[in-house]
Length: 167
Image (cartoon, rainbow, N blue to C red; front, side):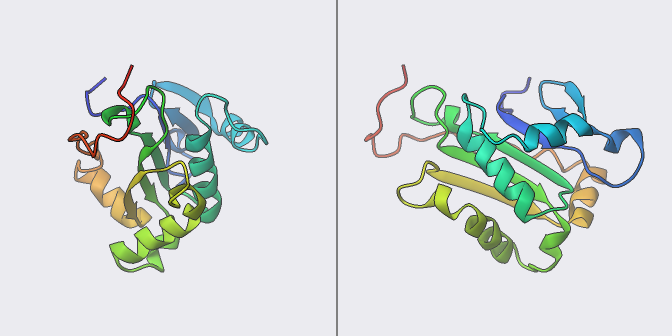
């Protein structure tokens, strides 16, 4: 696995037709799970115990920007000065027809931030959120042009030193 990939993100295949490629739910660990199981997993009432913030972000974005064309939620906390298994730094890569209504990147970021208002609030669990928000057409063009492999955010440069050191 490349250094810029985090093991804690999920990738939703585009739902564009009956082809085999659109009938799977991919988890970056290369496991393939049928969409029916994906729907059942998304409808569970209790979040996974190990990464509840990631689950909450995925659930809220899936509901708010349905139908999703593409969604990745990457936990990039491991690249920062936080304790192991933290959920404080995220990158969201999302493509939805809903973004056709939001013409500018700033408007799209505001839409995502408003959905995740509790999580990104001053007393919320998310310290940093990087957003890439596209329409399905823009995302498909990025894929066709080989530009859909969005890199990781930069590593932490030290911050203010107020957080406990990694163990």
